[in-house]
Amino acid sequence: MYGFFNSSEIDEEYYNATHTSAPSPILALIFTVISGIGVIGNASLLVYIIVQKLYHNFISSHFIAHLCFTNLIALLVLVPIIIHNVFTGVNLLQGSNWLCRVQVSITVTVWTVMAMMNLCIAGVHLLTFARIHYEQLFGLSPTKLCVLSWIISWLLSLPSLTNGHVAIYGPAVRTCVFSHSDSGLKFLTYTLIFGVFIPAMFSTIAYFRILQILFHSPIVFQSLGLYKSRFLVYFFLLSPLYTLPFYILTGFDPTDPVRMNQNTLWTIACTMFAFVPCIVAPVLYGASIFIIKEEDMALTARTHKAPPGAYHHVAQQHNMQAQLI
Image (cartoon, rainbow, N blue to C red; front, side, top):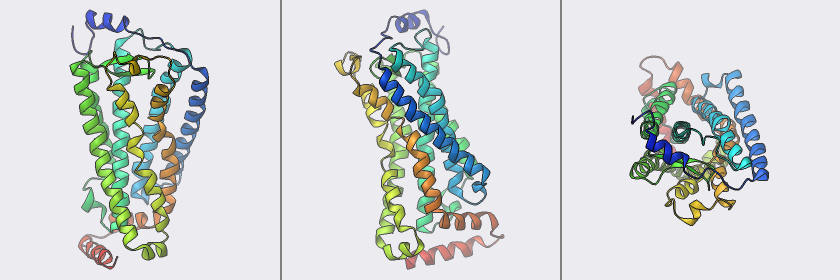
């Protein structure tokens, strides 16, 4: 039977693949400590947003809290499997091709949701600096956008569940990855286009626009206390680059020495590097809550508290402020 259940040929091919590699206990320990720090950071920021009820006052807090939740899924579900594989040198899921495909599906879903949350936060930051009303830019409530991001991301990852040829264990990267079959390469291409390049492109455009606004009127934003936020923007621009080495490595031919090498440490580093955003996100976006919160709060207050008919007046005020800047 083909589809959600494996055929005997697919099972046999998966079982006969290489599932062992050189163990690296020290790297596994380092990755465990770093991941633990990431769990504490994301959980702390998520609890802070919920306890302080920042989602009532700040638009960006909706997306930041959802990003922290998504990061926790990655750190608590995906990373422990990789740590086990690095520590023991044996694939934890070697007995089930189905679970390997589920791991790829979760990875694609989580990374795509993270990219979309980064895009939404970039949009909120842009409207903060460009004096644009939230509804003019998005048109949907933050909750609907978060739910929609999960639906789109899950649909994007669906081929890994319905096609047994798209996923295989990569001994070099110590995790299940895209296979080099026609189906696997198509799946990788769709994932890169819709889960990486498109969100990264719009996020980059938004942050370059923010830098343009900041550098156009530095004195104005210094008086508002927002000019220092340019340093955060520089780090935000790096977000799409963390997963790039992993995707490039998985795109190599399975017979390539780089992908077949089971002893090199830099291939494991590419896998670990792909999860760096989960660890640094609470620091960067937590700082953005305090640095950019004044304008964010004002826009949110206008969105929720403006009486009927006041929207056009607010929009005119934003346009006048933008012209002054």
